[in-house]
Image 1 (cartoon, helix red, strand yellow):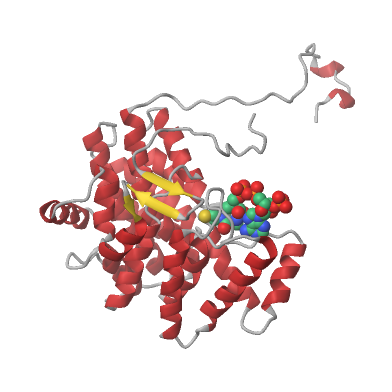
Image 2 (tube, helix red, strand yellow):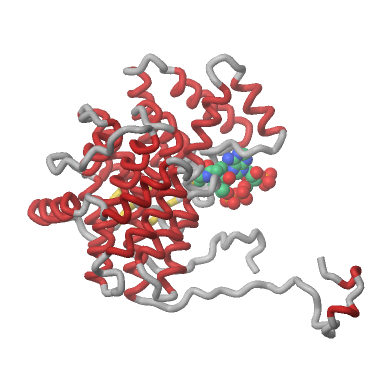
Length: 379
Ligand SMILES: CC(C)(COP(=O)(O)OP(=O)(O)OC[C@H]1O[C@@H](n2cnc3c(N)ncnc32)[C@H](O)[C@@H]1OP(=O)(O)O)[C@@H](O)C(=O)NCCC(=O)NCCS
């Protein structure tokens, strides 16, 4: 068994999708540096790249974007489940359930063929933003806002969420944030999706499981915890003291550290600049300055760099997005990566079925229930 556990360093699949150079802080999707994609591409273009393995022509992008627009509406069943959950379910509970329910009406639900999987991936990418926006509006007592075919993926989501057309800079920032979260090699939720796909189960089951894995605070749930930390510290407290005390109590500072990056996460570099810019336009610049301060303290004290979740928190907050939606937004973006991994797994499948090292009791005789003494009960 690997010394540290957690499958660290274990290669579980061959993939053409995404690669991380953790020493140098470089992340590539299908051969393209995410810094180039963030600067020049849209989320729709990046989805095509991840699903098809190459950048689209103009005509291909128009057709794919049109397919996404056409698939944004939800079925009546999915709407009614979301509306029912809006009052009591947490955002990730809602999303996990809504994606699962959505399989019921999907015309390709019985097929794992590559074309059927591509169509299901397209529909899930298109529908998850509608699910999140509808849930948020219903739980606030507002009417849901219908998708707007004239807007791109990022702008349409922001409009469905807030009811107002976003400005170009908010739309661009959000689009880049979606690009940066679209895939990330063999992370915990992607592995979950591949394990489920490897049983020859279906796309919706794999994505539902992946959402469950993303929800945890050691994975996608960290972005919400970062914002909670910023809000808890507030503007007044001594940040150096606060962080040092938390570290002395052996608490984890959310948004720092990574299994693969041993330097600055390149996604955090880009998001930090967005957070800085938005702070400059905001009457609450302290969320950025606090984040920057915390970054310096954690680096000095622990040698840990920020990961994608650290500056996405203040960036989303500046965009007016409520903290509880940060992780569903991560899922809304990552769905393309999960789906591409499912397609890749189905294309060259062998059941993922690892082993465990048994550390339980040695073989022993069975004792009938009325002759069992309390002390023979194993712990
Ligand atoms: C991401 C993460 C789970 C990776 O963990 P990992 O590869 O399993 O690393 P480990 O948990 O073995 O941590 C190694 C050491 O660094 C410390 N460490 C790692 N991340 C830390 C953090 N965010 N804050 C404080 N200490 C941290 C651990 O306590 C451990 O110290 P120790 O050896 O003295 O016990 C971990 O860095 C973490 O919990 N980060 C916070 C959650 C987060 O931001 N998740 C989003 C990831 S994109």
